[in-house]
Length: 106
Image (cartoon, rainbow, N blue to C red):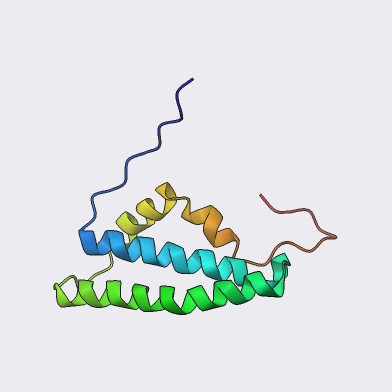
C-alpha cells in the first residue's frame, strides 16, 4: 500500500517558504502553551522558551521578505500552503475547546 499523495505546495519564494515554516513553528508552540488543553507546567515552559526564538525567526523571515522587495502577503497562496502543511489542525490547538457540556460544532 502506497502512502497517500498530498497536494503540491503552491509556488512560493524562498522567503515566503521560510515565513510559512516559521509561522507554523510559532503556532505549534502557542498550541503547546494553551492552558485550555491542560498538560504540565514544564512542557508549557519549554514551549514558551521556544516561542521566543521562534518569534525572532518569524520576524527575521518577514524582514528578509521586506528587504527583498516582497511588500505584499499573497493571502490565497499562503493559505493554500498552510492548508497543505496541516495548518488548520495546528491552529486548532490554539483555539479554545468547546465546553464539556456542549458537543463540538462541525
